[in-house]
Image (cartoon, rainbow, N blue to C red; front, side, top):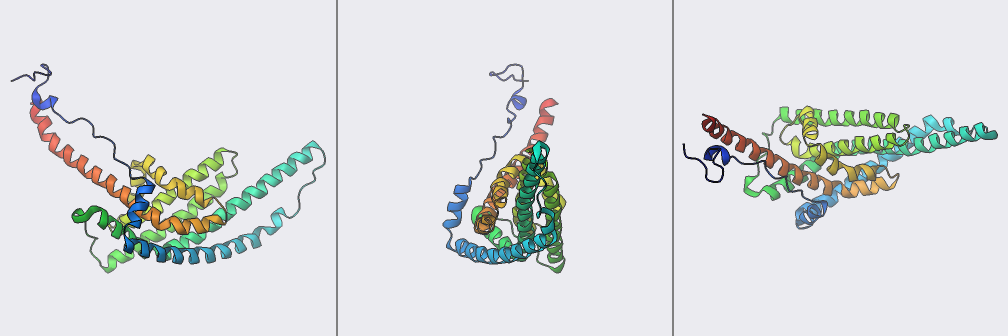
Length: 287
């Protein structure tokens, strides 16, 4: 056996094994915006989706807020007696609960309305995501799964499951929001990962991914998932303004998540191929 002159202890086949791959190059939001603006077709379709999503979200938000206020108006009509130190503490706690409930209920109303808009406008965003991925991948673009009735029913069922999960997330956010400081952080984390899941649904729906597989992707890519969903989650916590901003940025984040999803999936395929090719070489080197 000939020894490697750079390392006389290890044989050439073992010493030349590839090291761990470099981290995936992240596509920043600004680059995704430039990518979107350079395509007139994607930009025009995004404008149509913005108007449609805004109209649906605004109408649903007004209905949801009216429903919540009608059921909870009597809870905070009369403040407690503020006489003395104990009364002052009770009054302060009452005000904190009142404003916390008002903010969180508006966020919940927004997400309930947005779930309806999200479900009804989903086919348009799937088309936008597919078009962006096709433009990014070029000849390497993988065609959609076969178009048939079973696939359509599967997509609808998966969309309903994501909508139902949104109700669960909203309920959890309402509960944990009453925990001082930590509760608000947990609310942001919950909505960050859920926002990423909503955007992830578009590039994965044409691949017929199940909800479990989508959640598994979030688990494997925890930091990128938080990175992708953090800004939409923070925007959603701003009452009133969230409706305008979310409708405006939703096409952009659909493209942004699609582009980064494509990069991460391409890296996963390359690593799997490299591992497959490396395994026989490692076995022969050890032998």
